[in-house]
Each structure stands twice: as structure tokens, then as C-alpha cells.
Length: 129
Image (cartoon, rainbow, N blue to C red):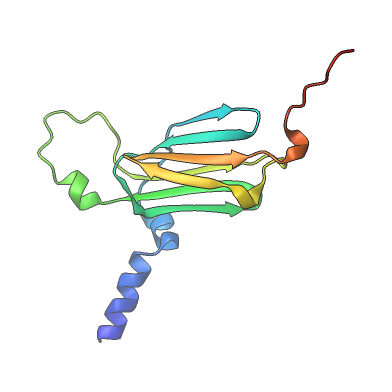
């Protein structure tokens, strides 16, 4: 009986199960471009590092963050203007991104993803003679 219960718990805690059965909202994002990188900043309050998943899938950057519902819902709100839900966002990546050098950091509910450009698409200054 214990094995069956742990299998059910594992299923409920899986990302695939969560996508189908839990509430998901789109995190707000900002994207900046520099000569060397694109920088994506996604606001995902309530998400802890262990509940964050970032993957590359079919030319897309997929960002998923799960929240602790019990901790966020069971509060004695005086005013609540923010949505509560897990976060899901899919971004189409340029073919000029160096996929092997993507870096991500999560700080205080703000995810920063650095998307380095391949050398072929970086701007190049041409000297005028």
C-alpha cells in the first residue's frame, strides 16, 4: 500500500500533472538586448529555486515555476491584488542564440536568463577610411 501511495504522490508532484491540473499564469517579463546578449527578466513572486524549471524545447525557452499554494493562500489578506498561481511562459528563441551558454539566476522571485548571442549575429563596427 505504501508503494501505491508514494507513486500517487509522485504523480501529483510531477510537472506534467501540474500543467494539466493546476492554475498557471503568465509571468510578466522584460527583455533587453546588448551587443553580446539578450537578457530576459521574469517576475515570479513566491517561486523558490527548487520549484523552478527552465528547459529548451523545439527552439523555445520554457519557464515554469510552481508556488507553495498552502503558504500563499492561507494568509489573512487585508488587500490582495496579485494573482496566485504557478507561472508558465514559452519564448521563441532566435537561431542566433548560443544554446550551450545560457545562464539563469533566481533572486527574490525575479528570474534572470542570459541568452548569449552567437558570434555571427553580434554587431560589428566597420572602420571608415
